[in-house]
Length: 192
Image 1: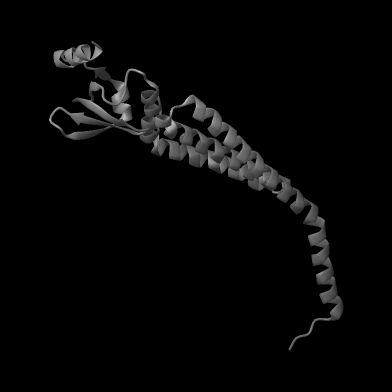
Image 2: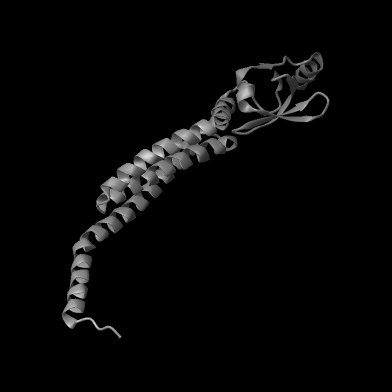
């Protein structure tokens, strides 16, 4: 069995302990930053959810969830890059930032229709003239709106079929049908 001289083993252990002690302040700084980032991100999420919750109705909770999730992802990504810089990995942080930009561009291109549906869904949910129960014509479909989500609108056709239409197609062009004489007379009789 091969034996190392004791002075080599002592030197290796000594260098290892010296290296550990030299990076200890950096590791502690990183842990303190990570703890503070966690607390701050939780506070920002809570304030954002509370503020948006007051601006949007319960039916529009999807918008609040979407915004809070997107903001949280960006905050954690920024915290991660900052942590790399704190622990001395500046080049890794720069590389990750650049690579993530390219990946995000590719994802955005691949999901452009879903993003268009989501943006259109936000507008439709905010539009006072487009609500569940309205009789509308859109995307070659005429019927009653039965549901509006962030990505899709559900319309019950005059034949009774449930048709799901992408919000980007609804937002492009929709027409609210005027109430029929029967609907107007039933509304008028209810006012007496």
